[in-house]
Image 1 (cartoon, rainbow, N blue to C red):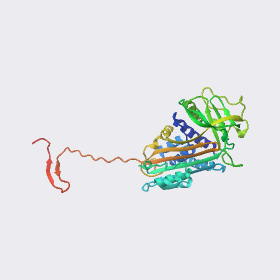
Image 2: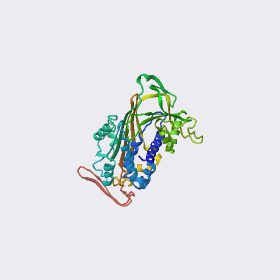
Image 3: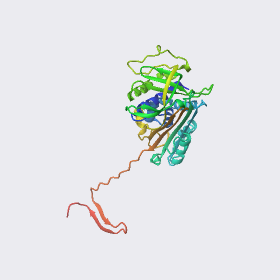
Image 4: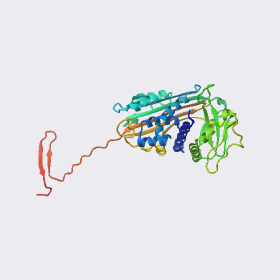
Length: 401
């Protein structure tokens, strides 16, 4: 898989995560799922909209086809490790009277492998329910279809067991989790003491937990990273996300720094933190760690439009002819939402994601006919049932006689 493209998708996800942080609730997203859905729309854009997608998704206008191909390749690569249950599905749903352009439709079907169906509640919700293994039921409501002519939906499901599970008897059910607001929440805290990949510097601590992997697989080796800022508060988390998004090589060095369990650097030789820029720069090495990690299950929903506008996609939300490769007539994106289910427990991790993009035609402005009565006219008083004219007057002067 092209490492430069992986950096592009990672950067995109980290930027979205930084822009959607909320001090009062968890925020989470599956960047690959969102990128995949947006790339299907990008494949049907031109001119200003294509330029906006280029800026947001990180590709050149003449590299649209290459971006689409790499998106599909990334999806295929992610499924190679059969020890992990990972599946994905793409779909488009359109109104019967909304005519799709054949070249774009062929790209959606043949390249993305998307299914096509009518813009109706039941088949859409059945697709989401099936593709997320029942984690999202009746996600789309009747009101969500109002005004929409086209809906694009991508789903992703992931389930994996820890290579070294947490022992349930070590879980402390009456533990405490501290929020950014200084409040405390009751939680079940899982615990283990073992050798694992670990990194630390002035800004953070990080550990890496491997999932079961297929021996000899040429596919991904899935792990979980737990990154804990040392500074307290949302700004510390945002700084780390922004640092990684600005310098993807730092994130790559951290995630690959364990070297498959070999010490990448001693504590004294690890890169030091820059005092001018808070870039996390620790290298991972295997050592004995006492880890306490909350057991949790979350259902999250994000409206991505504000963040995507910040990243440069603003023109796509204004009706224009720049979606002509999809269909003729002014068209705009009216919705980009992302739903995430995430559960982490003693056995492993289960995750499901759904990205929904809805598109609308521009609302045609009513033609206003002007009638300026500034010359002689006929004035009638009449019965509309019988047609009887009670009074008829030719008004050629408005002065009293």
